[in-house]
Length: 318
Image (cartoon, rainbow, N blue to C red; front, top):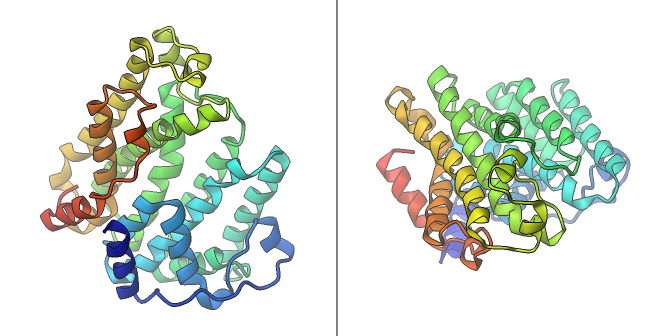
């Protein structure tokens, strides 16, 4: 049901045409790891990439006004391109090369000379359409590049800094596509982005553990006497669940902060914050399984998420 609703909405948005055949790769496009369609299918390429790799972000983007929707797909596709670099490389040098491609691409976009890559082409159109701030793109790239090192966050503040410079920056850009430049909206975006980053870290933990990696904040793990090995072995003792509870609680606090001054946030900004629906849903399900991060139910896609999103948009709240 959820999939059919999303596909129907995508077709209504005018981007349901067949994918174009990809051109031969070469030069900087190959360096970015691109194998997408020609520029004529750039809008659909971005939407399809987001649908496959960031389904919740895809659904949230569908609820944006038509004049912002394609730009939001481009922003989220850009985020996906950067996010998947870390998991697709075996050598850091390759990751640095791909990050440099996107850094150069952003520079070229703001020089009205975007590379022949579908996400970059759509970003250029979004920049021209909404006068997007270059600094936020660079912050996302710089922070993603720092994160190529496989090491856990030293403390929750380090995780929040990463989230601020990636997830919050993405929300600042989304607000700009909505024509919102407001200090209260930015304040809400900062907290929601931090909550998103924390939840993303939690959700990815079982996957990372299968690869013998743990990125959870070390200070909270040490506080409860939990080692990385405990997570890699999938232990579910109380102290392991206490680590997850503390981290999840921080995400909840950020959501509460963002809502505490919602009356000061322009209603026009609310669609940018519908991602809170998925965050609430995950944290609620986490409580139901007593913060067992490895519970199978937490890895399932929420079939009711489209309905929850529609209700939240109807109520005009975040």
